[in-house]
Amino acid sequence: MKRYQSLITFGFIAALALATPELAHAGIESSLMDLKLKLTGVILPLLSVIGIAIAAISFFTGNPQAKQHIFYAVLGCIFGFGAQAIVDFIAQTVR
Image (cartoon, rainbow, N blue to C red; front, top):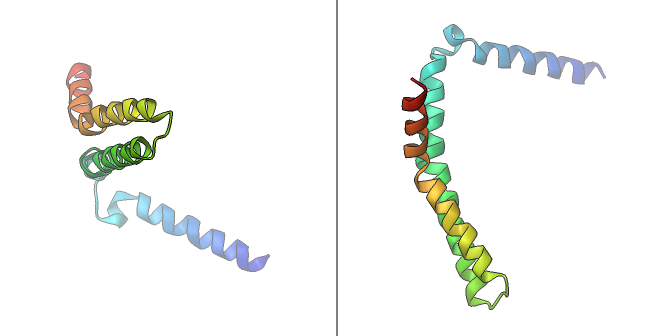
């Protein structure tokens, strides 16, 4: 029990140290901007391509739901590749 308590305490202190910009040597705004760029520039397009690949496999194996899979994959590509434009549009609208 004492081991878990010290582990939890260490984790809390480490999270607090990393969350404080002065200790982490980073600004919160720049960190969030980097997170947005990674999410909209790398992760979402990658998931879109994986969705298209899965839909293609579904189509070629003769799955009866293949048309629905392709529709969802194309919809995912629209959101995945257009995520940056969507985020920028919302940011400009709010300002």
